[in-house]
Structure formats: C-alpha cells, structure tokens
Length: 447
Image 1 (cartoon, one colour):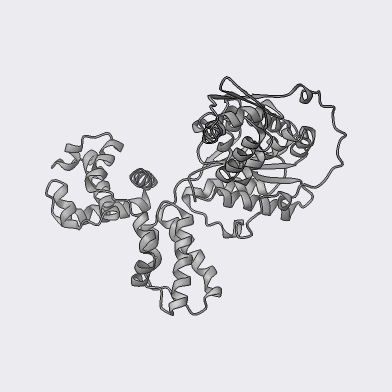
Image 2 (tube, rainbow, N blue to C red; image 1 turned 30 degrees about the vertical axis):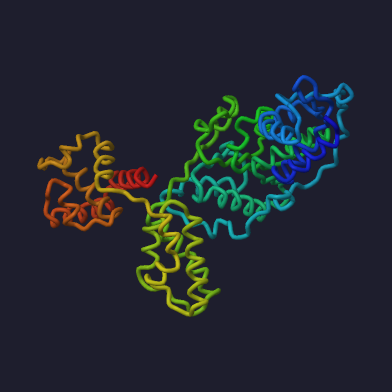
C-alpha cells in the first residue's frame, strides 16, 4: 500500500468520522507497512492505538478495501523513538481556573438557583446543591446527582458554579463534561503534556464533572480520573458529579471508582410530578410576561400541558416557548384549541398509551394481591384501597369514561368509580404513603 492510497483513505475518514474524531484519533496515525493482510501503523501512545482499534478499526479496514487493499486486521505500534522517559515539567505558575475559562463548557446564565423550581421529587437534590454552593467545610464528598434526561441535573450543576463564583470569586472552580475530561486527557497524552494536565486538575478547589457515565469502559481515562479524584478528596477539595444513573448501575465503571462515588452523598432527581410540572410552567409564564406583554394564557392550558407532557422538563419548557412565540405571531390568546393545534406533534410524541388493564396489573403487583381479587366483589380494605388507586390512575392516565372504567372493574357502576377517585384525591393530601405510591405507580406506567 502506498502513502497516496492512505492519503485517500484519510480524506474519506475525515468526512465519515467528523473533524473532532479525525483530528483526535486518525490524524496521529502514521502508516508503516502492509504485509500478509496486516496493516501496521505507528501511534504516539498505546492508548490511542487501542482506542482506534476498538472504535474505528472496522471503518479503516473497510475504507482500505474500497481502495483495493486486502487488509484483514490492523496493528498499532509505538515506535522506539517515542518510548522515552518524560522528565518532570517545571511547575507552572498558578493560574485561576474560572468556570467561564473552560473551553466548551460555558455556563448557562438561565441556570441559577433562582430559576430552579423546587418540588417534592427534587427537594433533596436542591438542598444538597445549596449546601455545597454555600461553601465552607466539605461535608459530603462527592455530591453525586443522578436522574433521567431533563430532570434538572445540569441546571443544578450550573447553579452551584454560579453561586460559588458569586460568593467566593477567589476559588478555582472547574466545570466540564466527562467527554471533555477525556478529550483533555487524550490531548495531554498525545502532546506529552501530562504534567500540565495533572497540575490543572489537581490545583482546583471545586471539580464539577457532568455526565460521568461517558468515561465508563475507557480504561486509561478512568485510571486518571481515579487518581485525580483521590488527590482532590485527600486535599479536602469539593467534587460534584452528575450522571444519568446511580453509580452502581453504570456499566463498565471500575469498582474502585464506583466505590469512591458512593462514599459521598448520592441523590436521585426523581421524575417530576404534576404539581412540580405545573409550577415550572407557571414560573416560565411569569418570565415570558415581560417578553410578550399583553399575551394571555386561558385557564386550563397550563394544567393540560402539565398532564400531557410528563417525562421531560426540557420538552415541557420548549413546548411553552413555542406556544408563546406562535400566539404572538398570529395575535391570538393562548387557549386549549390553539395549544392543541400548535403542539400537535409534541403532544402526540408525549402520549403514552396506558390501558386500564395495564394499570390494574401494575397496581396488583405493587400491593402483592391477585388481579382477580382487586377486580372482584370483595370489599375488604386490603383489596378496596388498591382498587380505588387503580380507578384513580385509570381516570387520570387514560381517556376512558367513568362507565367504561367501571365495566373493567367487575361491572361496577360509574358512581362507584367516582367515589373511589374522590377518596384517593382526599387521601393523597393526608397520607404521604398514598401520595408516594401514586407517584411510584405513575412513573412505572409512564416508563
């Protein structure tokens, strides 16, 4: 294989993989030889060779085949000239690593504690974030925030950074994503600047890493993250981590890192409940009132949206933003008819078709009773309360009428269903266990 052929492959790979992947991983490769179906490349480090082999090897072999080369596998070698012992670099002069100084990690000015709507599903996470943002002695390290998309993890991370910057501008606060940590690590390896990398990450007072699940399976990155983590904890520096799941549920995360992450405060941001979604919408309407003066929202619109868009706060906020913009352009009041017309695609995508039968099955499993007993005629409390819970959820989560729901509960009259729904509405305000069970069941059914 000639260098001209490899140059053509490089051009194709650049278009297929994107500029970032190409410059980070492909550009450092130097073609050495092709013999017996094995294409040999020189690489600056074994880490880069292993990463390219795992992530781009098949693509490289395919593109070489397109150029008429018979390549069965790739081999990556670090040339002898590159295998030198690095001398410790002179200690750089101290510099402030400010939150706005991190390339690719700008803070969103909207994400502050003032704009974070607190409700039961996120009150613990909010309180923990507030405690860390207040500064002072480290009380729990790390603070680990986790939850699904659009539940407020990044909002709280940015809010902490904003508050720390306001209260203690002298602190070195470093905020970045796990992917950026990995990119900086790889760049330091490639450019032989590991001492600078270690100095940067070990000199901060507060390290904030978003979406840490992305380092799972990246052995060398995990190794460096582990040592950075230990150095900061030993130095009484605060670490704040976010992920989309709990440490114990992150696949391919090293046990020693998992153990370290679990030694602090681990807080789950639960899916939003109806009241919290309604509060978020009301706060957005207040913010929009200055931007769209005179634009009114008819009664029932916010309640409708809070019920229909239940899984993702970002989608909910985006829907309201679109609604205000559309109403402003057409000069109409924001009522239910306009809402349904303007957001038909969002509402359709957010619809979760839950059936009465699915609700009955989930409720009976939750309370560990037989489905036949819950639907049947027995009126003892062990069956009656779960039956009422299922009726309430059927009324809230399906479009079935009361008579239809009654028929699916052993042919009961619609007034019986109505009574059950009212009873649960009363109890959920008085009994926290009932409220928790309802929210848990709703989340399970919406999942």
